[in-house]
Image (cartoon, rainbow, N blue to C red; front, side, top):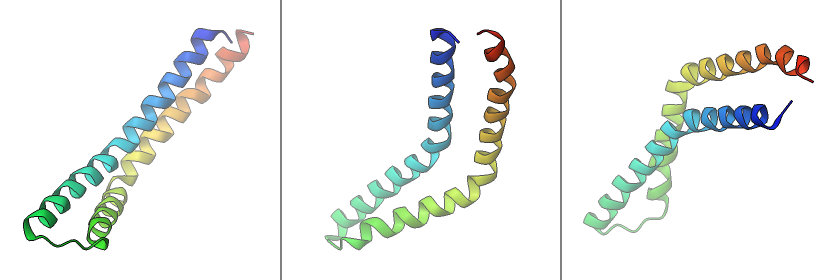
Length: 91
C-alpha cells in the first residue's frame, strides 16, 4: 500500500465524517443563534434556555436523518471492503 492510497482512504473517511455530521452541527448552530437573538430581545438570561432547544433539535434531526446516515455509512464501508483485495494484491 503506497502513500497515495492511504491519503485517498483518509480523504474519503474525512469526507464521510463531514457529510454525516454537518447537518446536525448546522441545526445546532442555527438554533443557538435563534435562542441567542431571542434572549437578547427579551433580556432573559437563563442558562438552560441555550441548551435545551439545541439538544431537542439535534436529537429530532438525528432521529429523522438516521436512515440516510446509516445508508451513506454502509455504502462507504462496502466500498472500502471491496477495495481490500486490490490493496492486498498491491503489496
